[in-house]
Length: 246
Image (cartoon, rainbow, N blue to C red; front, side, top):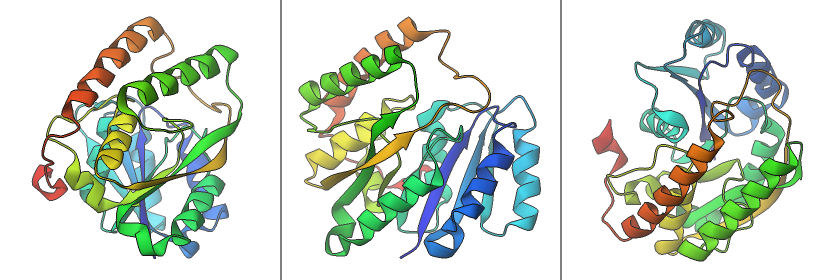
C-alpha cells in the first residue's frame, strides 16, 4: 500500500536539504511513500528553487508552487489536490516531526487494512522538545477541542496524520486554513464514524528558522478559539469532493 506524503514549506530553505536527506535515510521511498509533495507556500527565500532542483534528481518529489501564502492548513490542502495515492499523510517541513514517526503511523495504518477506508491514524507527542509554555497551551487546546467537538483525542495537533482520501470529500467548502484545520479533519472523521488511532511520537526542537506565529501568540490563540467554534457549526454540512477544488 502506497501513500502520498504532503509537506507545506514557508521560508524553509535551511531545512529543505536536511528534510530530503532524512526522508532518503529513513527508506520511506522504498517502504511505502510513492510521492513526496513539497508545497512552496509563497516563500520569500529560495525554498522554491531548492525543491525544483531536488525534484530533478529524486523522481518521487513533486514540487508545488503557490503564488499566495495559504497558511499552514491551506498549504496542506493544496498538496492534497495533487496527490495521486488513495492514502494521504502530512507533516510540517521544519524537522520537528521526523520520517521515523511517519513509518510508525504507516505501520499502524497497515495493521488495520480492513478499516482503511474509514481509518485515521495519527501521532500523539509523548516526548516533546519544546518550551513548557507551548506544551501547556497545547494541552489546553486539546482540552478545548475535546469539550466542544467530543473528539476524545489525546493530542489534536499531533502529527503525522494518515488517512484515506475519502475523508477530504467529507470536508465542507468552508475549510480551515490555519492550524485549526487539524481539528476540522478530526471533527469530520468523528462525525462520520471513522476510527481514529493514536501512536506515540517524538516532537523535536525546531532546527532552523523561526515559527511564523511566535510573535503573535495572543492573536493566534484568540483566532483559534473562534475558528474552533466555527468548525463545530460546520461539522454536519455536506462535503465538497476534493477533485472539484483543483
